[in-house]
Image (cartoon, rainbow, N blue to C red; front, side, top):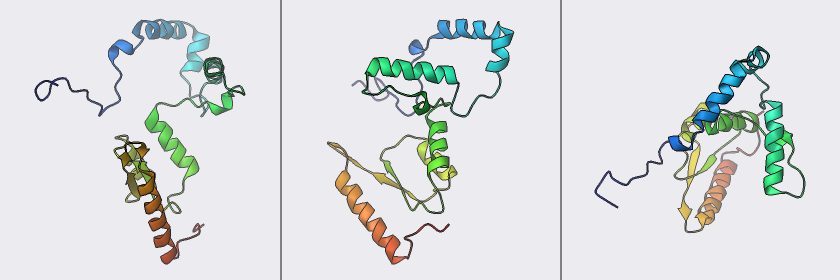
Amino acid sequence: MGSFGQDIIDLFRGHPNPGLLPMTALAEASAAVMGSPDISKQALRYGPDEGYGPLRQHIAQWLTSFYQPRDPISLDRICITGGASQNLACILQVFTDPIYTRNVWMVAPTYFLACRIMDDAGFTGRMRGIPMDELGLDLAYLRRELIAAEEKASAEGNSKPVR
C-alpha cells in the first residue's frame, strides 16, 4: 500500500462504481416508459407494497433458472424495495415489537445505517455487537451474552410480552 490516503478503498458508503451503472440502458428504458402515456401514468403512481408484480415474476423466474433450486422460486418470496435501509426498516416494522424486544444482536462492525434504523424503530440502547473471529461470528461470545441477557430478564421478571 502506498502512503496514507492512497490505494484505500472506501467501504463506508454503498456507492457503486459508476462504471457498473447501465446508464445507456436506463436512459433508453426511461425514454420508452415516459414516451408511452399508458405506461407512464401507471409507472408514476404508487405501486403495491411488495413491488411491481411482473418485475417480481421475472426476478423469480430468473432466480429459478439461474440457481435451479429443487422447487421454483415464487414471486411471493420477492419484494422490491428502495434498498437495504428501507428493507431493514420494513422488516423491523413487521417482525419486531419495541415493547417486547430486549436486545438486537448485530455483527460488529455493522452496516453504517443499521444503528440509526434500529433507533428509529424504537430499539435505542438495546443494540449489542457480536464480534467476528476467524470463522465469522463469534458464536461462543453470542451464546454467553444471550445466556446473560436471559438471566438478567428472568431476574427482572421480564419473561413474557407486556401486551
